[in-house]
Figure 1: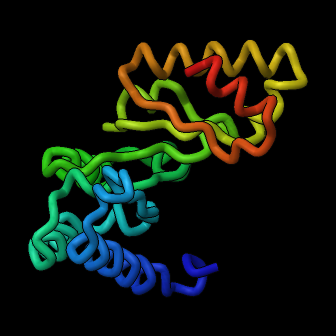
Figure 2: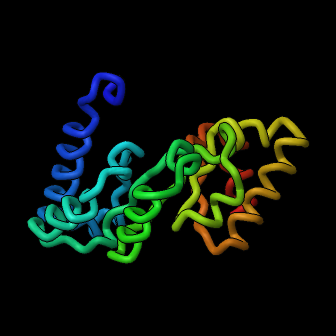
Length: 173
């Protein structure tokens, strides 16, 4: 909705500022928090000058760029070229990390996982939920986690809600 009515930029900037402010005043290591994930809409990532804007905010609050992981969706994967690609590469060089959200819930091209500078892949909840009751889904989940590991990426399972799902997630690491 926010993207359609044009206020996504304001919301994104506000949230990013608040996350940076929070990181600067809280001792997150007490809570065993190593980084904060924040969604960065593709439309923002495609803007010329966004890297400088982001770096200015981080500098203002004096925080380490490694404390921030930008969560991206399939939209970024599908449009990874031009200014978007340049911005993501520059942000990665500055020490930010990228997390692909909801992998397994759409049309993510595995070739793009190789191209995009990701550090973590979040598995979609439907894949993790289906794996406890479907042999095919279990096989797909096992192959997916193996592929992601071999690409030296971290994996996070989304919305583990039952004991069986937890056991499956622990079994797969």
